[in-house]
Every structure is written in C-alpha cells, then in structure tokens.
Length: 485
Length: 52
View 1 (tube, rainbow over the protein chains, first blue to last red):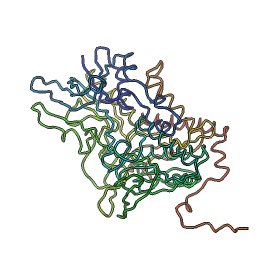
View 2: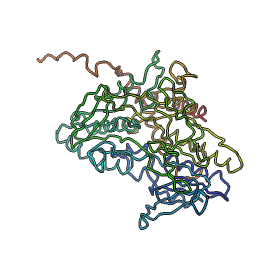
View 3: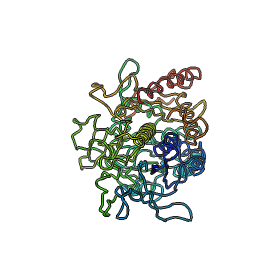
View 4: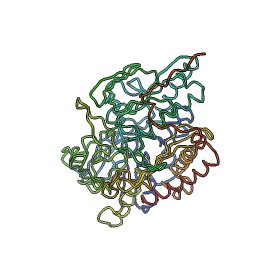
C-alpha cells in the first residue's frame, strides 16, 4: 500500500486528486492538504467582483466532496518537506499546520510515498508598498473573498457616479513581474460593462496599467493570428477593444508604491509617474508559498528543491541563457523533481525555466516583464499527466510515463468582456503551443491554424458553459469523468 | 450653431482599428453567434486533441 499526498486543492491539486481517486487501486491512500476549506473556480471570480455572482456560486466545501470519496482531506497548510525522513525513520514526510477552526496551529507529520506540490502561489502583495486589500489601498479578484470585497467597493463607486461625481478607475498589474494579466483584462471590461448597464460609464475614466511591453502580451510574448487577410499581432485587437470601450492604457509599467488615491509607477524608459485613482484592482506578483525542505540530519535542502522564487524545481532546463538561446525543450515535461523522484510540482507551484515574454529592464535596472502564465487548462493537463505517471510508477514503471509540456500543449482562454445572456461578450483565444516553438514554427513560434481569437456573445455563452461544467466536474457529480478538462 | 472641433490626431486612440457598426452588430447577432458558438467549440476540441 502506498500513500500519495497532494499539497493544495486548487485547479491543479484537485484535478490530480480526482484522477488519483479514479485510477489508483483502493489499497492506496490519497491525502489532500489545503489550508482553504473551499474549492474556488477562480476564472469566475471576476463576476463576483462586479456583483454578477456570489462567493457561493464559485466555491464549494472540499470536505463535503471528499467525504463521498476515499480521499482523506486535511485542512492544513504545508510547512516543510522531509524527503529523506528523519533520524527515526527514512520514510519521507511533510509537516503541515492545521487551519481547521479549533485546531489552528497544530502540527502533523504526514508520511508519503509520492507527493504532488500543487500549492499555487502566495499572493505577494507585500512586494509593492500599499498594494492589496488587507494592508493596502487596492482591491483584488484573486480569491472569492477578495472579489466580494472588490464588488462592495465598486458598488459604492457606482453610487457616487450616479450622484454625478467623476471617478478614475485603474485596473491592471501591481508589480513589474506580475503574471495573470488575463484576470485584470477580464475585470476591466466587466467593470466597463457594469457601468454601461448602470448608465454611468460617461462619469468614469478607466485606465489599464500593466507590465506588458505591449497590450495583448499576457506573459506569452503576445500572439499572432490570421484575420482579414493579414497575420496580425494580438496587440492590434487588444488596443482596438480598449479604444472601442473608451479605456486608456499605460504599459511597460512597474508599480512601485500605492498610496490612498495615488499609484506611483516607473516605466521602462526609466521615468517615474503618479496616477490618481478612486478605485483600483491591481493583480499582485506571485511567489512560492514558502515551503522549506530538510534532509535526514535536519540539513536545509530548500535551495536544492526550490528555486529562489519559492517555486519547486522540476525536470526543466534551468541553465541561464540569453533570450535568443531559449528553447521549447527547456520546459518541463514530467514535472518530477530532479533530486527526489517521488516529488512532483504542477500548476503555478513548479518553477518555470525562464520567462516566455522577452526579459526587459528599465533604465534604472528594474525588471518590467510579465511572468509566464501556468494556470487553468495547462494546470489540469499537468495534473492528469502526473496522476497517470504516479499510477504507473506504483505499478512498477521506472520513470514517469506521461508528459504535459507547455511547449507541446495549447491553451484556450475565454476572457469575459461583459456578462449578459444577450448583451454579454467575451474574447475567445486559443494558442498552440503556449510556449513558442521557433524550431517547429519558425515564423511566429505557433501553429496559426490552432491560434485564433474573436470577440462576441458566443464567447460569453462559452464562458458560462465552462463555469457550470467545471464546477459540476470538480464537485465529482455523476459522469464527471466524461467531461473534458 | 457651434462648430464641432477637429478630432485630435496623434493620440493613443487615434491609431487602432475600430469595429464598424456591422462588426459590432454581428458580435451580438443571435443567429450568427450560435454559428460561432459551434465553430469555437470545434476549434477548442481540435486544440485539445492536439494537446493530449
């Protein structure tokens, strides 16, 4: 009998747990550890952030779902990995700290045969002074709770607009190294849509502020698509939508500090600026959750297992090279840790070998470049590949049997630009592969047959369908295994 | 009668393409969007087949 421990129960961790439950013989144990009692369909948080959905619509209790399965759920956060065990036993274990009400702070060592690190990121609001809903002056849509709070503040703003007051709204990224521009992109258009529905759009100045070199970069170096007889960069379409909705944009920006009502930022040319605001949603940079690792003699293995960013090293090529020498082959395939074969990291928790967008620094040496996205569809694909590999390793395979390289998979993103059954819209985008492969596709790095984008009501229907489908699937309701991930 | 001012050139919003009325109408035309819904689904299925 073996025990597989999954740290984290977001899209990556919960997907891995579902498939392990499906594929592993009953003799094996599956333990899921998550500090959050609820699963959250994060892509729909933007609708919570504008009051179209509630927190309850995008979350459910994990314990309730796992109770119906053989998955053992521990509401706790991972503190440290001990891949060599300790002086008393050579069996690997992870130390976790309970977050269950009434048992907060209690420590437990959970032994494992295989461990999947799917903790997701730490929302590193502290990287920018004054950023975030807890210690700062901006709101967030990164969690359902944050999104609800964002909507509460947005409704106060809407009331002020209805009284005839003029307000400035700033939405984008709160640091030069942020990823997840897509969430901010969706939020700015949903805010615009809500203000139009309320008849107060003309009272508001809306500004996009991001670390992208150009609009439409999304941390993937932008995309090219065929449209209207041309091969056109996504920047053109992103700018077109901004102009159509009357939104201004500032790019190549690193937010240095946020004060009440004022954002201070630096741009790539080395100049410094300030932007006044009344309401702002800025995505924080991500980092690892701070897991430590120790050897049998309590020697610190953290730097061996984790990258300086706190994300776990996997089978990527981390050799530092200039942008021109980057290759699709640098990206991990099996997500196995190179030091300990029974450790895997998926979703945001794995350390990417490098950026996808070209690294940039301001004249003052400040990095201003988006980090690579690795959420949603790629996370689920990694989770499934790793679950299959662990199943096969338990059946005697000598090495991981399945791969899910971001340089060999596509991603679909349906970005809401306004929620309404008949007046809604969304930008539907697909890219293949996510990481450009210039050896296979020399001109643009991607397959233009599988890379496309369009805006329309159909996209909104698609986003709504995905919302219900993925929540149904995540709740493990009858037939969930037949639904695509 | 007040004469409308000339549109300010060389600004951020001066350059990007802007959808025509027809393009905007088609984005919310129910029949056309039902067609696009199926087309998008087909494209995504093709993408997923290639990704796995």
